[in-house]
Length: 350
Image (cartoon, rainbow, N blue to C red; front, side, top):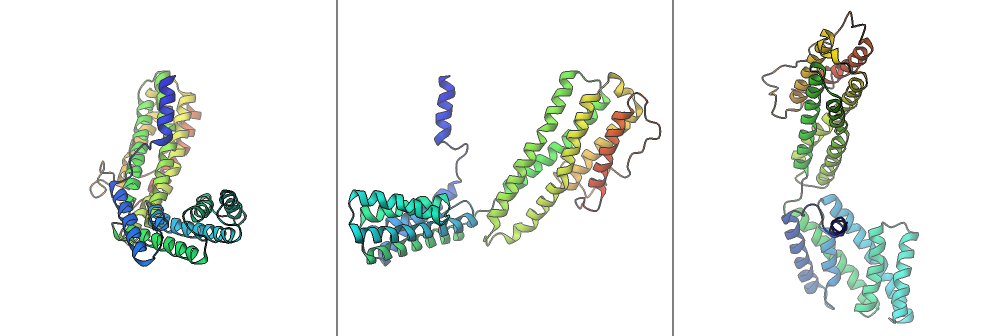
């Protein structure tokens, strides 16, 4: 019990993986550059606002950086203006600071600012009233300081190897396609070999795991698309990302059909299935489907330049077994859908 509690406490403040070292270095460079630039250009107190702005703006993608720069700038402007007005009217007593923080949160809620921006309004109001004199000149300097820090943070993120998240997307898609192919082969083995109930349950479980793998691949593609937005390095990667998205959309129905076919076999399995010639013919079609899945995506397991498609024509059975005709009919219907997906006009180009 104590070990479980320790794990939960650790998970509350530790990330499952480190941020890239380059991201850490860029953030440090942005903070230092913003501090030095603001101290040189804007005379007055220490440039805390510029450093914080640069720190927050350097994000994993340029799109996130731009959004964070806008969020930070709007939050600071509202917070500084609010604090200046309250400070000029009532001074900087403790109760004024507390009212400014509360009023900042209410103001942000009223104008529907994001949660991060709402917190920034309150933080800026507190900093203005505690660190400086609430005068119009001071407020204007802090706004300019924040804009400068946000600008420097964004420029540093653009100039120093702007992040591109296409590699994780490619890896996620490669893993998904390989698992789809493996699932076709496992289902073929299940039909060709006598299976125990635990063996059927394992095949069913592995087939169901395709859906979370598909979701992870989709999330990786969305992250990659975001990383290419506003990115000067994005042009060379957009075509690959579009192809990855097209393959994911094309192969998503295969996952539904694979799970459905596996469920059909799981529910209607009989020990003599492996001896039925029609069932063995379906198993052969599943192996061909596995080949064409690999061939269509080019995972390296099958070379599309050397090996032609294996699903050349839909399987047709004239005389299904009277004992298994329901199971065979259901498998054939899904198999024909798979054939249309892998052999149709929307199939991945070789």
